[in-house]
Image (cartoon, rainbow, N blue to C red):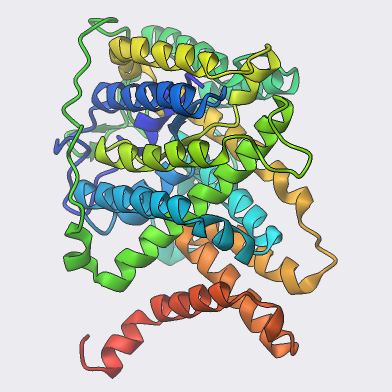
Amino acid sequence: MAYIVVLNPIIIGTVADKTGQFLGDGAAPNLPLVAAATAFVAGVLTIAMGVFGRVPFALATGLGLNAFVAFGIASQVSWEDAMGLVVLEGIVIAILVATGFRVAVFHAIPAELKTAISVGIGLFIALIGFVDAGFVRRMPDASNTTVPVKLGVLGNGSLTGWPTLVFVVGLLVTAFLVARKVKGAILLGIVGTTVLAIVVEAIAKLGPQVVNGKAVNPDAWSLTVPTWPSTVFGTPDLSLLGQFSLFGSFGKIGGLAAVMFVFTLMLADFFDTMGTIVGVGRQAGLVREDGTVERTREILLVDSLAAAAGGAASVSSNTTYIESAAGVGEGARTGLASVVTGLLFLVAMFFAPLTEIVPFEAATPALVIVGFLMMTQVKEIDFSDFETAIPAFLTIVLMPFTYSITAGIGAGFVSYVAIKAFRGKASQVHPLLWLVAALFVVYFALEPIKSLLGLG
């Protein structure tokens, strides 16, 4: 799981919000700042899971969730406002756990749509990886072509530049390690590719693509120039903690849009968590004969608080990790394993300066591989049943095609309800799903509604 300490800063720490500021209110990315907070929250909440949940489940910032926060929410509000919505999402889930309503919502969403959400997020993450690495690039003048993105700098299918080669090598090596089921394959891939990048930069002296806001070399490094940092070990800067505005988004983008963002976070968060808990719990022998998991209430409560804690620390929602299966595979059966994992995350805080040497081209192969791993769930969708397969397909493809997780989930829910209604099977749709679909219709038609009411 250690790779998240590198990947989370790359995903959320390099994106400017609506105001042009990066996390920490800086004019430039501060990766060690985000890395330290990421490790801190993961450490504290993983220890909490070990102590209160008493299971070998570890938690950290959720991949996919952080991409949604960065590209879907922070592009419309400030980082403080975006993280406030994450805190609200965690609070809502905690209430759902306490009231037992979470299980009801879980059963309201068809299994195929739950799976499609994870698959779509995987494709979205993979696209982000390809674009951030420069392997796939936006066309410089989209008015002269109907193709928004193409391969390579020139857009003619030809790959140029040492950083692109570093990305390709990193992707192939990481894929090989994952295929061989090597322990820590993703982290090893990041470390090995970073070493290669440092060697390439030491020899070629490429520098950055952009200097003082001006593009100087499209074949250079897209963000971080890989050179050994002045310090490897340092006191962690935890100033990100508490930098959130709970209701700031409501006044800036409207109550409905803010509620839909919270709802989308909630969907992506707790469906993934339920699957992880059952899957890892079964491997650990914690699943009863009736299919339930021991101490489910305590586990879900800690997981819900982790979502809120991630927002409060400005590192995005934290969730239970499927990589917990690695510890279970080594014999972990109690919360002691989580306590040890959490303590090691706290130690990782002190090595946050190392994140400054990792360029996009070395970290993004991991995003592509994680996208693949999430994509493997697509086999659980029955594509012979068009009533659910078409909504699942729309959910999957619209996430990367629109660069929006919300759009994918909304299209899937609305189309599912519509198809069932047109087929005379409206009674098969859970009332909660009708409500959610109606909210998404209003969300998609918000601008026309505003104009109709004279509020535009």
